[in-house]
Amino acid sequence: MIVCVAVVGHQNNPLYIQSFTEADDALKLHHIVHCSLDVVDERVNNPKKSGPTLNETFLGLLYPTENYKVYGYLTNTKVKFILVTTDLDVRDVDVRNFFRRFHAAYVDAVSNPFHVPGKKITSRTFAERVSNIVKSFGLSST
Amino acid sequence: MIGASKIKQYSNVLEKPLSKGKQEVSLSAFAFLFSELVQYNQTQVDNIAELERRLEDAGYAVGARCLELLCHREKCVMFMPFWLSQGNRRETRLLGILSFVHSTVWKVLFGKVADSLEKGTEHEDEYMISEKELLVNRFISIPKDMGTFNCGAFVAGIVRGVLDSAGFPAVVTAHFVPMEGQQRPRTTILIKFAEEVLRREARLG
View 1 (cartoon, each protein chain N blue to C red):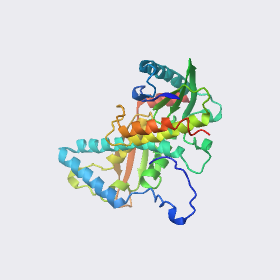
View 2 (cartoon, chains in turn brown, cyan):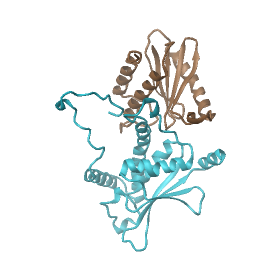
View 3 (spheres, rainbow over the protein chains, first blue to last red):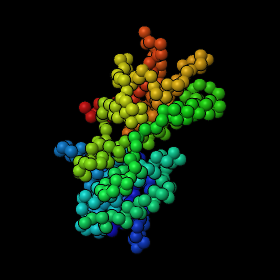
View 4 (cartoon, rainbow over the protein chains, first blue to last red):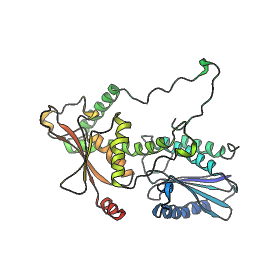
């Protein structure tokens, strides 16, 4: 069950935060996303120099907390995607797939000539695509 | 839509979808659009420097989006096993990002790699990408009273957008360099990196 997705810009400014459960406190989710940014910075600045993990885009499980798992993804322009989920048995492949589609939606949203880089993403199409991707997250795993 | 699509097997050849076609735009359409862009900006400003700045800003917007697009497209390669598609690395070294601009970006935008990439001799932080004839300048001739104005400022803006979004702030300008034995001068994009980039590069060793 995906609880929240967020897009954070390269100066750690939030560009898009969307939560998908009414039950949880939105502020708590914002806080979790904010804390995970530190972990992202740590991973980026101290890369594990063992082979292909250098300069990877998919950062993997950032840190597990109480009943949430947080995954991170970094693009070429230092824009970070954060995914907060409550699933206990998420497969790596599913998360990578999710981020790939999320990246596609993000690139489409940013290619809009009326979008100012650095400002929040206000496109409704982007919001719809994101909720579609989130809905099909658990279902596509067979 | 950007991204890999599912591949279905069609029993009947009539049911196959039309091919996506080449990822190209007609040169004449682009030349027309670019000439309109230059003319529109010309009516809004009263001096050359302002016109160059506006073209550069237009290019900057293109460059920033170009980097995101390329990073994503290089990853989503169809027909490859899914775990092999994590192809593109984020460039952190100076030479890495310069060769990325010189080959990949140029290939996607203009259909060929740039003619040459050189390091400047006088200053440590200067690099030059030269091109015999910039695509955007193909149908443009500069009147004498405009002096050293170069519509390649648009391309300089694109390069600046790519470098800036990748974390390498720089000042990029376009210049004409006259060559002996050739009628039209060669165009050079001069890239001057900011202090912090050089310090970071020195720290990385």
